[in-house]
Image (cartoon, rainbow, N blue to C red; front, side, top):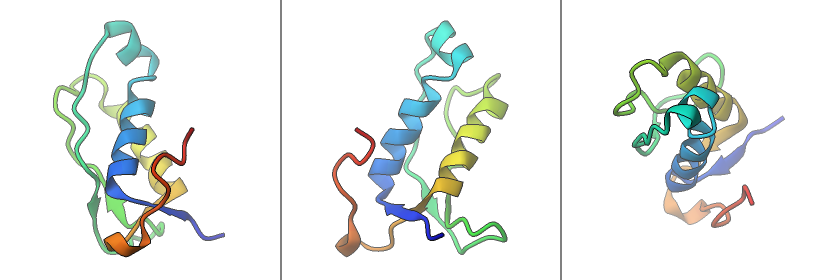
Length: 91
């Protein structure tokens, strides 16, 4: 099954939302800056983007990586601006 495509901005917003819902991050009241996803060639698992560094994420790395990888399995990063997805497909 083909993955749905989303723009970098939409993926960034959804990553931020999901990351800030991680129990320990929510309990600590941590506010993390989630950068835009970066495109790369498809890897062995068919993923075409990643976020490799999130500021102030020390101590939450494993939980954050799980969220990022889950979103990478669910969505592709749209290539080019001509095929942009809906403004907020997660509502």
